[in-house]
Image 1 (cartoon, rainbow, N blue to C red):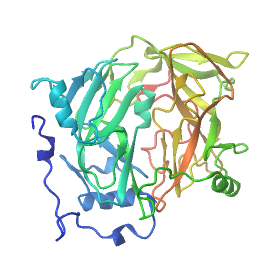
Image 2: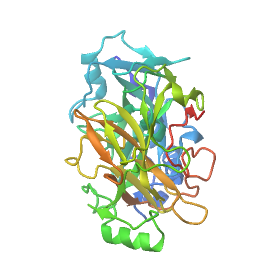
Image 3: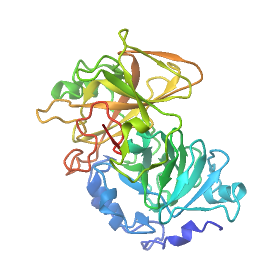
Length: 402
């Protein structure tokens, strides 16, 4: 095993049957759904989540775990999945040479725009049969147009960890707009954990249905206007009308910007990387092929404490663009001091092969809500690590507006 990652992780303690980590169902209570931070901490203590280096407190979010890049990266010709019978390591053995590792130690390395990299992560999982995982890029990763997906051994899909999975984790990283510098320990994607009951083991849809969503909205508003539902999700529309201050309704990434270090917060001038887009009288925007845009939803929204949400396509056949690179919304996101929705969804939009007219108020995505097994004790926005609480149109945390 050239890459040798599995040997970095000691085997966990096992029960007498030899086939499960030492934990009991009582550790997780009687509720099922997405696990809050407190249960993820428990998973760390029970060695269901382990790391080459100790799991950091800063990795723990209200409903997810931030994943860290390991010490090496491997540039590959194209994206791939290992399939159900192979490991990622075995596939890498056929694609890269023994001396092709790129060190991410120290100052790290530059990942070039337009290239694809496979990076073993510092985390390793040893899940029971009742827990699976769902991954997504972090918000800042999506806003930098760094296409990032999670890969596991024996899988034929991205961003999913099968229940009972035991093994390493890998990130596929493909910068699209900017070349970026990354170091070992950098956090580009995140992982949610879902606890299943015996009737849910083969289920694939866990979102609340439209009846329950409507009832929840009537009790505590999910958006700041009439709720619009479709396919068991809350419809979001793009906002292209003039903002009251400067009339900026979006940003377009510059083609030939400098290298950007993902660990440097507030270090870069917006104007060195982005072109502001001003509202037009007809409230339209033409998406140019192979351009990347930051836009915002027309609606303000909030996520109740006992729910989490994910942005998904409204219908893959509806448009000529991709949106929502980073789609997780944590419990508490957008909750205003008056109990009203306060934050817009920021949209990471990349056009496809032809120019496309985007209209103000056009449907651009939907939020699917899922129940937490229990509300996290600390909600999104409760500390200074919540960079996007109450946001309007906003670039990633790396940029200063000047």
